[in-house]
Image (cartoon, rainbow, N blue to C red; front, side, top):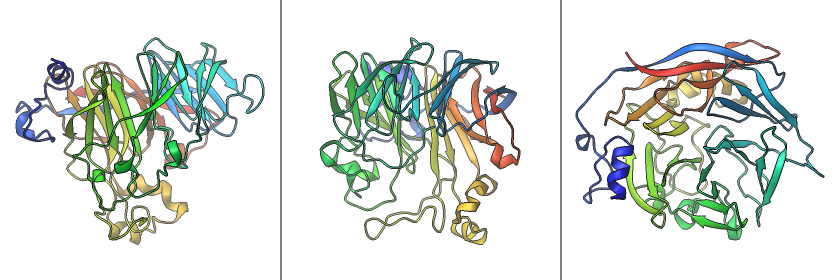
Length: 378
């Protein structure tokens, strides 16, 4: 029954015992042309830089690293609340880099230190939950979904339990991947094994990925940034792995198996395709990804130099692809280079908001701009 519910909820996908992967022929042979449109832009009257953000239920929030602050705004750009936090002492909130609203509207924020924060409606601190160990992760993107809420638990990417090193080449194979914190007791436990259909479940060596995930009802959807797959788990049935979705990008650069551990190729001589954003919807599943850059183009344009990192959108396409509740895998929709990060996509029927990349377009402002966007059939 639970698998039937999952199939109805996410695209009418048929689960089979013959294969972990969902092949194209297992979906309805339906094609619809969709497009991504920019409806408008809004300006938030704030002088700073957004380094992480979230939008849900009519309001958004972003994090400013330099000021250690959170700014909450509405669909018009009007600032609802703003808090600059002390890093020590009463009311301390230290680097709440990644945020997630619950369905009820409570905002939770994850620090890259060892704290989870539950915030009041005015963004003041309600309570802090301290982890029993420090995170060992030293990189990642605050715009990736690495925290979500399920029932009375916060689930998050927070590696380091028992001294596990997330930079070990076989970390994903040898460890449980996420932590679950009970909001009532504060107790934590590790959950979620790597899917057997992931290449990271083997003893082979691959480029180190970033992890992100999302929760919808009792199902957890997880991906690794340089693997064009989504792994689905049942949280209500012992976190059982259910199946794998291949989102079938037409182009997704991959530097392949490595001959030895701790090799880094992507960003040095080429750029892998990468999942940049991942959103579980009530009526589907959306993935925002970059196609990557070939070695020839990468080296010709010296894209390994830090001063040229901002030029990546000139040489690689960024795409959005969606599964709908009607069993349709949409066409690839190109995301304009001036879009930096998508805060969230809640539904195919609702607009969503994306941060404008002012560095890419070469403009400086004393406000922060978000594009109001929508996915719609042509």
